[in-house]
Amino acid sequence: MSHPRPGKGVIIELIHNEPSCRKCRDTEAVLGDVAREREGRVTLRVLTLREAQAAGRGVVLPPTVLVNGKVLCAGIVPCRDGVLRIVDRELQTASGR
Amino acid sequence: MATPCIYLDHNATSPLHPEVADAVRSLLDGCFGNPSAPYAVGQAARGRLVEARGQVAQLLAAVPEQIVLTGGGTEANNMAISGAFFGRRETARRHLVLTAIEHPCVAETCAWLARVHGAEVTVVGVDPDGRVSPDDIEAAIRPETLLVTVMHANNETGVIQPVEEIGRRLAGRDLRFHVDGVQAAGRIPAEVQAIGCDSYAISAHKFGGLKGAGALFLRSRQGVDAILRGGHQERGLRAGTENVVGLAAMGVAAGVARRDLARNAEHCLALRRVFDGLTAIIPRSWRNGHPELRLPNTLNLCCYQADAMSVVLALSSAGVSLGTGSACASDTHGQEPSRVLTAMGLGTQAAFCSIRISVGPENTLEEARTAAALITEVVERVRLVTMPEDIGTCDENCPCFLEAAK
Image (cartoon, rainbow over all chains, first blue to last red; front, side, top):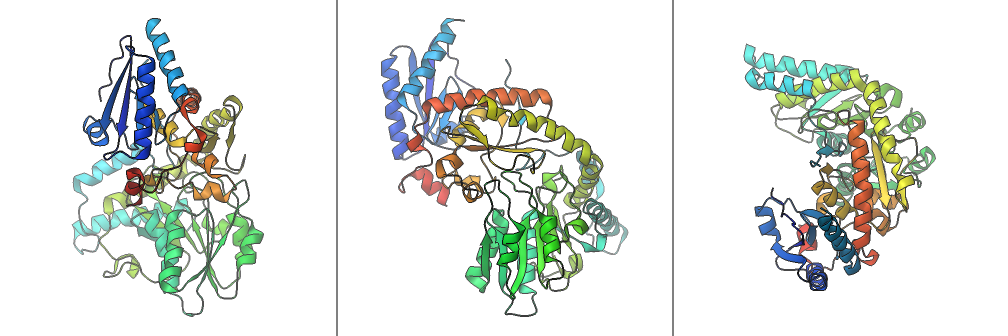
């Protein structure tokens, strides 16, 4: 299983069902907000469950959100402020390297 | 730091014990005969079944003739309950008593007997510690009660039920007392004479054996009908060519579990104490289940407002495997709160925020400490992004919901 390499930015991945459910759509909206707020420092990738499974990501419960390759949450719509805090922590860690 | 690989879900299944793995390799090399065949190759296979039956009997302090070899714990429980129902002499005896925390293979079998075959079922609740009261069991019994079924230790909380006391109360009554010992056998003493039960179900893969092998202790075969027909195996109680490798491996696993029982229990308890300590470290967390009367390897931990499925999957991506509850029920992707936890009085949200940690003999103290630190870290992260009102909700049009409902 290959994880994205964060470099100095943060990679957020959303793995959603096809067709998207309400939670998947709401999660994508939250993550889109976060990506806009931290423009240039956050890359948002959206994958279908099938694509994620084909890539060997071992995800079973959409929507799943991964931050720099590690699962943050699954099956719930994440709170925007919480995601921002976690992204900021990752950015701080990356800049401290 | 390298990603660890720490397995903490032994109540779902345990890794194959190295001594059992060695036995399996040698069995795969030559033990292919049909145990019913009269020639030497068949009789060699039969010999392995005889040996396994003896080893299982020793684990349960029974005699070999009282052991029926099965295809797992679910089958053993089905045989004990359905077999007793269909084998009853008086058709008026159709009342079954079970607890609210039984495994689905017991609860759903009783529900099916009620729905399709006219059984009457009484479900007895548990206290907030997850224990059933022998008084409540006694109060549920009627003249037409055929069978009482109580699990020895709960799969989600590890809480040990007062089966010996219930056995004493039921002694001399004209009914059957069945105990689902799938989580207990091989982890705590499971001596059927001391319990006083009429039947006791076990599953090999919970104590270092292979999946697809189990056994049912039956004090007497009288009044128990076969649920699989079409063969004379197991003296007509379980038709079908035996899974010789799986059953022989179960025998070896039973021997190892019996030999190492006290040492493993002490080791697992030391590891569990590390996780028990999390309630003092993680704010708004608590243990679900009795503080002491629990399997030495199990902790059910509620981390309030940290969605359990997110915690489990986040831990998985950090190299730690543990469960949200019963593995047999969790393929519903957590759309339903745990029946066990809600029976103990937990609210839906608390139930959706509960994880199950079940250690095994091969885990180390270092692994326990690493995993405890990761749990603390992951719970804090998940709480940051969890909106409490969102826990456990899915509208009926959600594909996830539909997927789970299939």
